[in-house]
Length: 144
Image 1 (cartoon, rainbow, N blue to C red):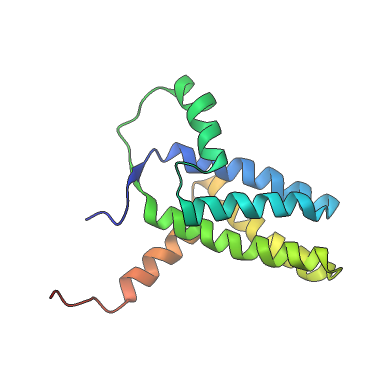
Image 2 (cartoon, rainbow, N blue to C red):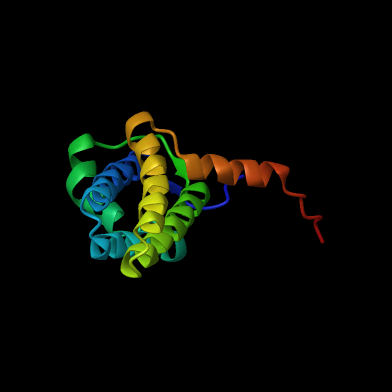
């Protein structure tokens, strides 16, 4: 009962590691153009798909061949939802920094960093868990 294509779960964790690094650099430097680039990365993953997302491309080209194949698969729908949540926080952070509202930029970026770090360090996808909770408590649609 899959809601989307299945993906190698090591790819999203690799993406979370890169995202954690990028967001940490943004928090230290407050350089919002880098956050804007990360916002685009999130947007591609959320709204276009995980396969064409930049970090996924890097993973498939450089990392996956060195790791070898895996039989493990993960549904893409929760991952795309997590990318959408990251997109919202990164967008708010970018706008905050760009408009000189640094506290807004810092807080929004810190929230995104926290979620990315949980995935990178502990393999816990906060956005994915929220997606599953929403799905679990949503009213089911009746079949026609």
